Length: 224
Image 1 (tube, helix red, strand yellow):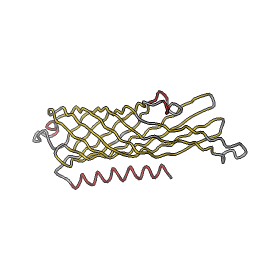
Image 2 (cartoon, rainbow, N blue to C red):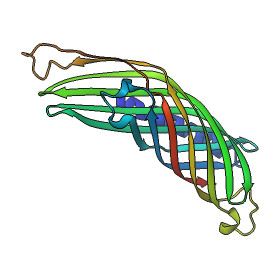
Image 3 (cartoon, one colour):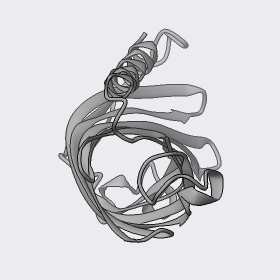
Image 4 (tube, rainbow, N blue to C red):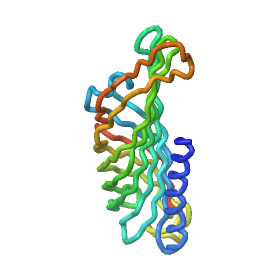
């Protein structure tokens, strides 16, 4: 149910930006498809994350609301699985749902720089399975991010000779680097006694996890 709600929220946010874009025909509309990763700075994630790094699929939609200023909706989803010991397995899924803005600076027809910032919610599902017993929890916390990036473009006039460096279809590869701060999440993994009701309940308190660190994204960017 919670994952279904997550997908509904994501679809609603992306649809809202898409509808805004279609109502602003004179403005640019963009879609990014690629990967994102976060390198956590805190050791509080060690019980659930190998090497303190997560990565996953990261789509984004954007619409130009003023010259070189964009409103955006972004989703970064990741799943990590680790084997702490022979009989102990951990799993964590994170959904970062963000709304934000981007400022673009056009250097040339094939190169653009940009700065992005935004706020959103982090949804986390975590579980630990040991000797057939599972303990799990779900948490939601706010986050914020800021990045700087560059995009290498195939110039618009390649696709349509009548076009200038603004407007019309274009595509490129973009890379950005910045910082993601997710406010601390308290995870108390509750033992699922229903699977083996005869066994004692052993909850696992992971304390407060600080999922804050270096954010990077590498994407294929499409402009319309």
